[in-house]
Length: 375
Image (cartoon, rainbow, N blue to C red; front, side, top):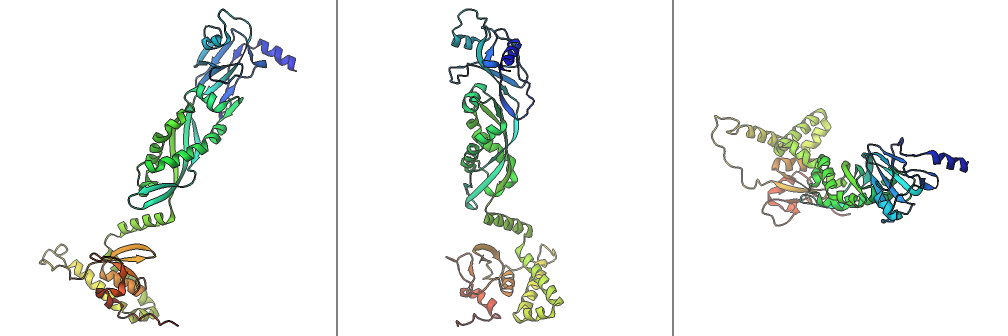
């Protein structure tokens, strides 16, 4: 069978690659003992590049001629580099040993990337945040000689899976390094994934050039934020949706009153802690808010807020919430969110302090029993 292969190849004078496998990026043309006859026809189709190498010697000095799309009759005239390496000063007509590698130059897409662990980003709003990301990218061959030397080696068929495995770790590390430099706030990362992808592409495109490749695109499919940051983003969205916190607190109080009316036992308990008075005051404040000159042009100017009505911030589960007006604080006392030991702060205070230590808040706890003595 070996003799038949040798004889068959002696009659083959066309060197070409019919690429029927979309996953193959580089294909080595197979010829018995790598012998190619002088005068053979080399066919390079559109979307291909061919590189001829001297007798399988992959050193930089042995990678010879590059052929762009077209049809060539192999001779010393169109193989100047190989002719120099071989020392063919004059015409040469005998078969010669060389390897021909065909490269597919069309774009390869849907290659996966992911950060190698969280990337540490400094954000003006959230401080230091650890972010993960993953997505896909696309590339194509830009310099066939460099790809051959840096990635392919002597493989007969170099597939897109081979290059994806080779580059996945390198890309993940580089993206992790450049994430802090893309200039997009953490809160906007998920809503601007296309911008993040473009910034990453600009930052790491040069890393692909050293392998002879062109980075065509980078798509970000998901951004992973810490749970506490996601909660903070949700809270900010809720605050923007609520708008006026005083009206929201009044609405909550009205909802609580309706629920209490439907449950007599609950109503008795609420009235026992003074919620009835709180709701009455909240509703009164609501009507008072509607009796402003802006709401009722027939009215005169209203007096300014009473002294001591500065809103307070409240520490809830280790996070800052507020500011809350007095009506909202009364509601929080009623539902147990705000206690005597809760830390509060308002403008003018040097540091956070217990709510029970604030003179203008002590009356809020008048209807609440003091803490039980220790056993």
